[in-house]
Length: 184
Image (cartoon, rainbow, N blue to C red; front, side, top):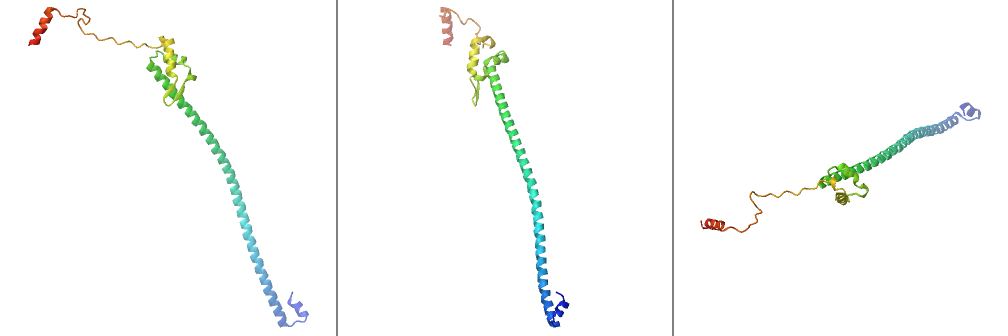
């Protein structure tokens, strides 16, 4: 409403001023409410945009996490396979060294040839060594003794002289001689 319209209605100037003042106050209140609502809308829109950006970031991060999880699983699988390979290699080395040591101790002339004659499937690696190895080596010594060095019996040390004299009794002269020495 305009002032002129109010004056055409026959209102006095004072009444027009009061109506315009009341109208201005109500319009001002509505303007303030509108401004507050617009500010709230701006804040809400900013919050929505921020949330969208964070959501996208989390979404990308989630994809990254899935990729990282996948990479972690792949690395874990590689680690497990390498660990198994290492354990097998260690067991093989322990088996090989135990066989070589046993063949050396048993006097094998050619450890490769003797090793080829061993039944590896019957050997079992334990903390104490290889089970079944001694039995197989003993059997090979009996069946193929030429593959092992036979330990020579040490020759007895013989003193000079005649240690195997047949006459163990002393002659009369020797007895007299020994008695003479005993008296000294």
